[in-house]
Length: 384
Image 1 (tube, rainbow, N blue to C red):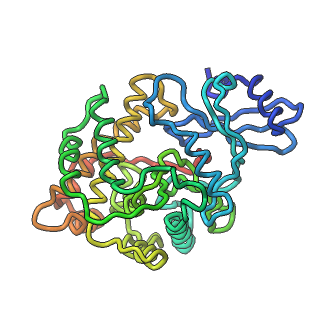
Image 2: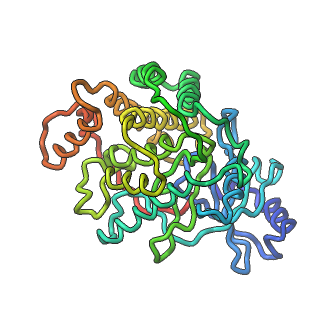
């Protein structure tokens, strides 16, 4: 049975009509690709009306997972703010309509880029899109979350510490095997927490393929996939976003080792300088820690996808393959704290330079198991 056929169209059509979102025409449903967590569909309801339905998956799920109610709430709160989001239309907790709770939002007609190298675009276009992406995350971290009604959207303080604990507990509860680097990171990260603290609204999964750009202008018209959003540390959010500068394309939607100057994409230092100028926030001092933390966190998320694939409750057809990337990400994460005699960041830069020259010289932050991975090519997909 197809994903679209799994939606009961009769009850859904009745619900849409009750909400004033459909007339007497039959509705049409099209699954949208790209999401690993929550099944997502485009709904055509006649008279040019087009929506996106995002629902919890069926089957057993972790208590804090698939928080579509939080997605709906944060995007509704951000309507009219400096952070572009789709318009929220309805939230339904009644699982008799489509089997699980869901929400409806407007469908954004625009461009979604899966590959951070932005193939097919001119260098000047790439640079402008990256500057716009940086502008939006800076705007997000400047939102007065209390003023938009999100004062209770999460706990304030100790965000990174609590995240390490959360993902560590989730990993320990998995039945799928995990790489040896994960328990090492579970021990190392809590012992090396940076001093100081700050709380802002954070997206939790801010990256290029979670943005919808205007069809022809270099402008973000919608930030998607807010499932992991909360109140947290802005540098944890920013460094997650910046993993793309360090992770090789063969592993996970990254551009580590690519000639960014030739592509017209700003280097990480330039990108961070623009963020500092926009926010006044210092990004220096503990970047290796944040990189290790976010690679650990991403690995934990992918292990969760692997677990759902093993349980038969994964939303995406490629969940098994996606879950297999968890181990290499964990090992890459462990390379940052385990680098000896130099900063992990400098080591990673040397490794990328070596890779660009075609050198086989080994650097501590880029072990052979990453160099030997086959390339993953991903093209633009529909928003999810």
